[in-house]
Image 1: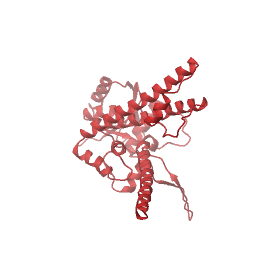
Image 2 (image 1 turned 30 degrees about the vertical axis):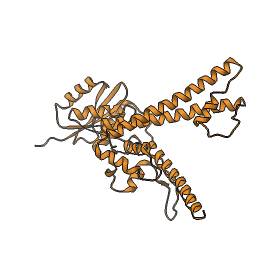
Image 3 (image 1 turned 120 degrees about the horizontal axis):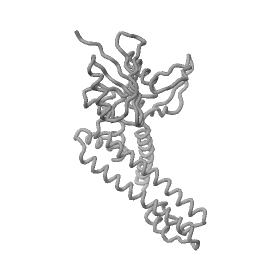
Image 4 (image 1 turned 120 degrees about the vertical axis):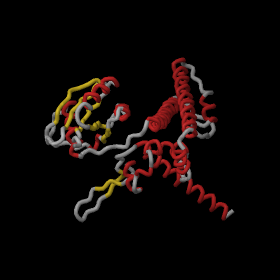
Length: 316
């Protein structure tokens, strides 16, 4: 006779994991197994203890601890699901929150099928995701470093004599000719220039790493990256970011689901005969949505430039 399945809820933190079990056929009854250290050996002991009885499966909320626990449980032969925290039902008026209660709530809802699971990448895919996110963080740091240097020069009345593109090679050559009589200002200028140069070198290093990752990709994933670059406004970095964040595009049956996953669909608040739609929901992957939006603007700009060039040729 096939044994019933137990449902285990894990409330995962950096140092601890609260464990609760919802037994089959005992509605409303959830057993707390206490709190164990979030360490590989402790997790192995927990798996051994739970595997002594009937079949079981586990779930925990996606969060800052990433997917390390999922990968470990999967390697140990445990069926594990990672659930979306924003889609976990919350009872109105519930003002008591503890790790044990959270684990019990997960186990209970896991048994009733009220949780929404998320797609979990493998370790190689997650490494690519971390790489493109590091490059995006470097771009943000570069923007801040440039703003600090630019506003510093503006406050002290330092402007180039001739018009030039900001942060081009010519502009940076001019910046390096600027000097101050006060040692404090000179030290500040040197520090700001060093940060701008460091940010530029950091981005170049990460983009070279992305090039190497693309070269070593599986053929199927590499084909998707190359296909995305055929779209106007999508270059290699944007294509790799979309693939790294979204994963396999074929797992979405319809384009509408793919756009909803990225949060690039309009919000709606309609009732009765009234239909009201608003701005995009932004309830999805911020990194891929940013590149999709930027690609759309770039495509629109490139299209206008091409149309202007064609018009100039016709009226030559």
